[in-house]
Amino acid sequence: MSPSKTPAETLTIAGTEVRISSPDKMVFPEPGLTKLDLVQYYLSVAEGALRGAGGRPMVLKRFPKGIGAEPFFQKRVPENHPDFIDTATLHYASGTSAEEAVIRDAAGLAWVVNLGCLDLNPHPVRAEDLEHPDELRVDLDPMPGVDWSQIVDVAYVAREVLDDVGLAGWPKTSGSRGLHILVRIAPQWSYRDVRLAAETLAREVESRAPGLATARWWKEERGESVFVDFNQNAKDRTVASAYSVRPLPDARVSTPLAWNEVRSARPEEFTVLTVPGRFAAMGDPHAGIDDAVGNLDALLALAAELGTAEKAPRAGDGSGRRQSVMPLIEVARTRTKPEAQAALEEWKSRHAGLVQALHPADVMVDGMRGSSSLWYRVRVNLQHVPEAERPAQEELIADYDPWAGREWPGQPAS
Image (tube, rainbow, N blue to C red):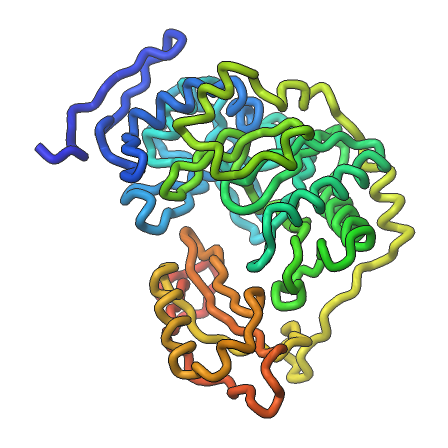
């Protein structure tokens, strides 16, 4: 019998039975963690994980083929979900809707992991009020070439701004390279207002830490800085919540921190193997987050004072598309990240004489959200290449179409 086809195991969690299929399936080969190990991990930090994701509709990010393959995103809760899984119907700007899963207890955590989910991706709203977020999310996303100390410096500037507008920020590692700062707010404002408040925060951080932080939405304009990603507060966005396991080989965990830990902590310290002991010893540093509810009045007043953020110019061809102010070329569009990296290496081999002129942030390999999964776009910013030596846009090395063959209501017949 294949290790991935071992008999199912039924766990009784606070009186609720949860079936775990293929419990011995290896999910993280490097530390030797199975699916059942991940379930046990989440049970060990359930109080903290539920503080971040419980009671919120969530997108199910599933890794049925393990961390070596691309996940798929499932908005709609499986039809055969058990009675202990609640649901909430979200309506998206595109006009579509989805009945999404809402977990409320440790049994729900185990059920989600059994589906192949590693990280938890809840919306910033409670199931009882889907139009008014109760969480503002500050995502500090470092550009290539940025080290941890710069991220920390920007985090403390963000904390200073939050203090000045009467809000409490609760930091956690993203589980990748960056930091998240969570802010509980009263559910009184629309998504549009919350996003505007987050953008205003980002602009103020940039003004206080020029060169270290940026609020520039377009990646090629950021340089080697920390992007304060305000768009994570848009209605259709989710982020990995506290105690989420991330799909990195070392089974890294998005871990809540106390502010006095931020400078000395390192993301790689926090894994499925280390976080349960930390949680047992010190509890959850975010235990008081739900008692620290603030309001957005001061940030929205600052938004009015600052005025509308500068917008990118539009193309003159009538398409209405944004026109970059940077000399960008597109290299490839691919289905997977390894394919994107291979295309980038091929481009570098074709233009070996230019590579030394490129800065780390000039090379952009971006995961793009498709209809149900990620795809990858490779671009190069030629700003540091002498103008006379810049190559023209060439035929893409790979040209994957993530929407090929898909149909939408109202789509013209081919």
